[in-house]
Amino acid sequence: MLTRRMLLAGLGASCALPAGAQDDWRRSVPEVRIGVSSAENEAGAIARYQPLMGYLSDKLEVPTKLYRVTDYAGLVEAMRADQMEFSRFGPAVYALGRRILGDRLQPLFRDIDQYGQEGYYSVVLVRSDSPYRTLADLKGKSFAFADPNSTSGFAFPAYFMRKEGVDPQSHFSGTVFSGGHDNSVLALVRGQFDGVATYQVNAESGVAQRLAAKNMIPQGSTRVIWTSPLIPASPFCARANLPDALKARFVAAMNAMKDEAPEIWKTFTDGHVSRYAPARHDDYLDVIAVTEELDAQRKQRRS
Image (cartoon, rainbow, N blue to C red; front, side, top):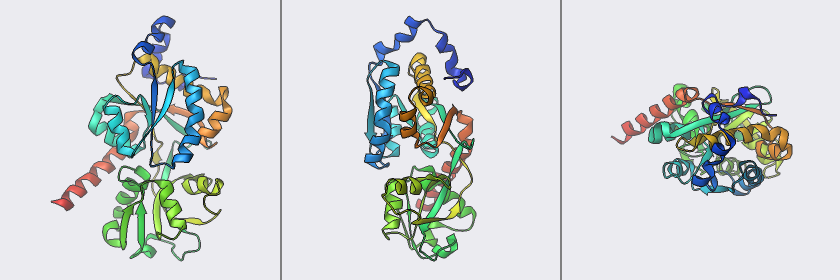
């Protein structure tokens, strides 16, 4: 059951609106569009999100549809063009979105896992049968990041590797962007790269674990050799110019899903989320600082 403390404070007042006033938003928003980046494996994304669309259509009482965009930055562009109502943003993509949209992009809530953890980690994976044990062992080897706008797949590993004296530009024989976390891990297991940056919540939950559970890679075929500091969980975001009653109803529906639609909840969260908690802009200030420093380094190299 939805609890009051789980509702965002900024949206709570709108929940007290008369029923008729709450329903008025449907005149201006006859369809709710949820954005997802195609950087995630297509079949996997559709399998996780499509049941959620049916659930939200019932709860919001308007058609709710999934829209895929070409990359993470495309989610920001869709929000800027008012072509998307809600989307889940990686922390670095949220930083990009705030740089472009400012307060027009509003964080709503984020995951808390079954251990009470409100975040995840960037990890460097190698094949489990490889001799590599540390980043130093990957000197002169091939390496893949996920996407230039990915927090765990680029921003955090690139930033903290340099802090540890490992410059990806010179340390590896070459680096590429694979186009997504699934692509990186699949290519690693196939032998196309010696190391990849991706994400992991804990030893039981992450990209490699999910792919292994789906028999897309063998169990135990990868090994972690580096872990970043904790990254705050990816926020579900809204266009701030949406009616408050719609945002409140969306938050309430997502919070109620675990109790009211447990199978859909399990499918959407992979069974690794205990509940949602409000997300605040201040939660992502460290991520914003990391992305801004990386941008400054890029500009310096080009000048």
